[in-house]
Length: 266
Image (cartoon, rainbow, N blue to C red):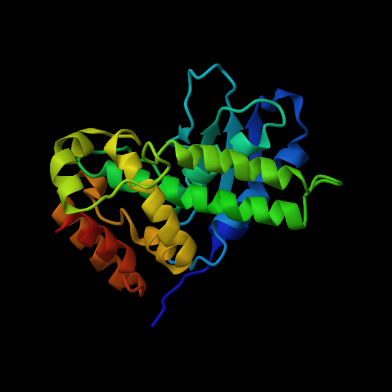
């Protein structure tokens, strides 16, 4: 039985702050709202820790502040997302926002949600895959019904941007690298030492993107992540067990943690 909660993350008011290169805030919000809808399309929202508001701040400071979740003490019901985009760079905005929205979906937006090894790599590869699946949906939505007049062709621009990002994670012949028990055994030390998305963790992204596109219901299990004190600081076997337990508490099947467990051979 599904225990899906109300879905404030899908309908929460979006506020913007920061630079934006002079772009109209109404236009920025229109893009963010469309990107949110695309990323969360066909996803059952189950988390009991969803934010009531989203604040998206552009810190166009030459890379000094990377895209991130800003952990803060004020506005405890607000998920505060930092991006670094130029004026009207909608593809880049949708990509950065989509990745960070994945962290919000995975309950990593409240104070105390700092990245922790040894399992932060799991969350990072999952939210990147969530984002790239969402960008494809956004490209299709934009082409069919653009948010701005006479702008349908920009849907292809978004698709091209998404394809370039995904290509970075593929093998030299443009094929997804095989990820499995051997891959994990050879790369485990490096994976568990990293707090961001890099190296071997990126190699699993194409496979996960394909899985999310074929079965969007898998994404709902992200809402059960990190609902325990250790968060990503738990050992991988414990982490997956805690995630599966959290899925049961929220009424989901836990198909996604089971898939990750099978992928790494645990």
